[in-house]
Length: 456
Image 1 (tube, helix red, strand yellow):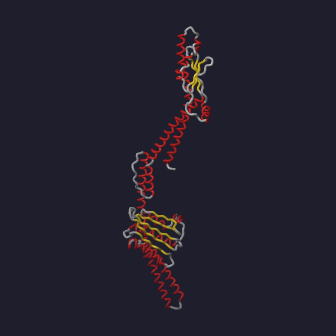
Image 2 (cartoon, rainbow, N blue to C red; image 1 turned 120 degrees about the vertical axis):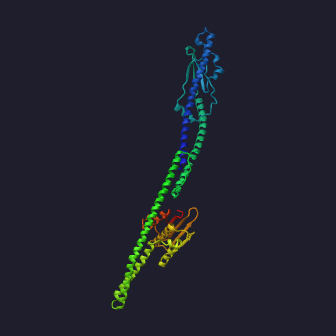
Image 3 (cartoon, rainbow, N blue to C red; image 1 turned 60 degrees about the vertical axis):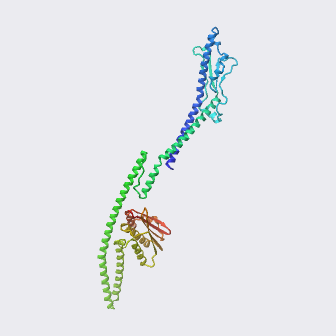
């Protein structure tokens, strides 16, 4: 899952939790606001009756104080204005047939659903009546009792919650949208970092990243750039070391070729000369045919050893590209394999692009790769057809592609993991040239492909 989606999902979860907490708080506050309205209504009516009480006391000073209230004047429109909606107020001791004075309770908010009307009182409890004395200094003046209407209280709470939730939903949606855009904008540089890492994986280590405003992303970008620099330096050092090792190995191969030619070649020539002499002498003496036959066998074995020695010397000496050029040396390589035996598989050579100016280590590496791959395909498989394709890909990425395919079967994974000297050698050569080598299954066999950069 993408990081942006993860952060947005977590943000939405937090917004949902905050919205739920706001809803719970709004429910509690709206439900308990009725208690506050009830207490305020009782306090306001008590203060109004206190003023009325002292007014009546001054006008009728000879009358007993307990009979001053209630008077008809307290049930007025002004008193109704002091009572909050959904609250009923009565005077005690009440006169006969006197009903409570109630505030407006009809049309207060929307009708709540049944589950809300049953759940809220269960968890938050019921509303208590509020009692206030008319005059703290005159207990005989009576008291004011305010009682909230339970149905009106729940309706007011539900209407308040709906208003709060509407605002909260709009705010939550706005916060989620703006925060998501901010998160996406903040993480946009991560794409540049991923692209740089992908280029580094393909061998382009010096990938310049833009300057990031975020300190954390700037630190990551700096670390990626430093990593690319170190990887390039390590790759260059490894390539230089590999090239030096290859040069040393080539020098040793040439020295070994000289020793083989000078020592074994001369000794084999001497053995062949002695065998021919023995055969000639024995042929004159017709009575000794066994010795002549043995001499001929020695001559044949010597010829075979000399042929094997010549093949070995060809492989040990400098490759032909240094003398003939890459294109001519590849043609000569294929022709030499074709001429060895008519029973060998068909070898197709496909040269594409301009190969005339390719020389030096790149030409040597390409020739060695083609030579080793053809040798393996001819000796270690039952291929009937082998294809050698050498293509120069011009342009910005000037490179040489060598591909050898055969239809002789084989397990590509096992061959790729092989630690044989031949594959190890071409891997080292290709790596020293800054290229890449791949071994993949082909139609009926294997495909070995090497890419050698010419600009390196």
